[in-house]
Length: 92
Image (cartoon, rainbow, N blue to C red; front, side):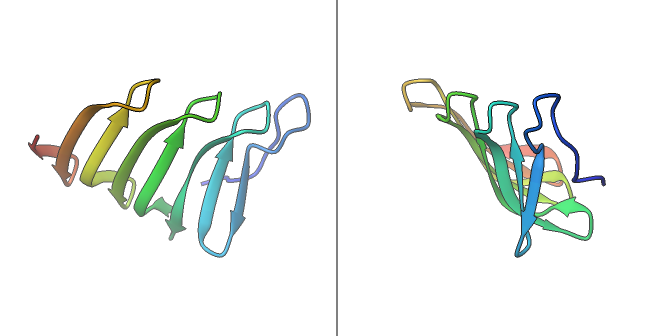
């Protein structure tokens, strides 16, 4: 996976430090971050809207949903709370 590159405005798309991969929006705010190992998202990841508000927290295993996924609306209220196993929903 190519974790390098920049937007047209020069903003980096990603950074990688101490096993954590961070994705950025073109305006420089964080889009998502979490553990990245062996070219895969693995562990707890947090995803943000462009306005920096928290959108989702989810767990991945080798780039596949595996564990609890919580999604928040713009007011911070939970609107989705499900558990996945190897990419398939197993509970709500």
